[in-house]
Length: 374
Image: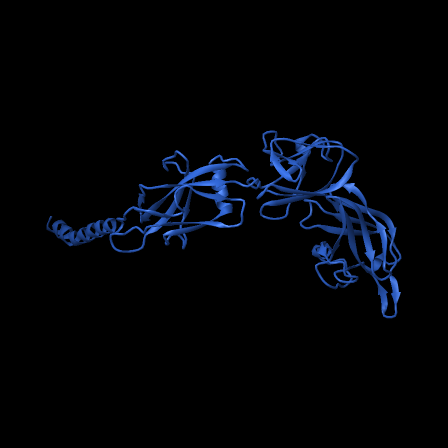
């Protein structure tokens, strides 16, 4: 019994220390609410289609221990009470600064969450939560901003093309995938014939769909094609809803050793051009056999026809061998320089018959070409 009492007496200071420490930690967590919002002024208007950002500023809150305070800026739709906010984001400096610099792109995402349609104007409310530890203090003041959304849409993770005018037909399960060329942009090389087509965010009948209306991307509809079948390059940017279309009128292989085009390619579908059973002949020079080549695309957009050149990522190359990596064959936009960025045929192609393919679709990691020596 004495031993038990002795143990309790020994442990008592520990309990007291822990109790005091816990009490102190809760005291240190006390923080005041943000009493005033400085900027932007109430009912400030922002055109989110411009390149820019919005600066939010507020009066600093105080902590009981005079230590640092963390801040979150909180957004809700007009008429909301922030109990279930649309969006919460830490302030600048990972939450330590009493200001937030917010890009129009991010603010546009918040406007989308609020149900504000593209190319229309709506209102958002915002406030600030201050915190220290687990203690969060919502501010009792808030302000309103008015935002005008650009013509863009949230960028989908994937995008597919289908419809009676397309190579895929009307079966959504056979839809052709587009290539994602940037954070908000897609493109596809494909043929279109008379009929209709649309874009879907997934291979499902319940997918979100888009269509082309002139130079703009629109939601929930389809585009009608008239006239003869042609090969197109379609590019679209979801950030501003812009679209550009061009026809690919001809694809040729340029052979600078003789200053001529060896042959043209036929479009065979799925973003692929082919030249079948063509004879390749290098040019004899004083130093050896010259085998350099690159490609020219003849493109028409908006009634204007231009040349686009594709070649190697390297300014100069060695002849490829059996173990040459796939990246050697990748095609990138290059200048119309007579020699620069040319590929070289493999040695076995000299004097032989070969079939060549140019592949610009989503099935390859990068746009590329292949040579099969027969």
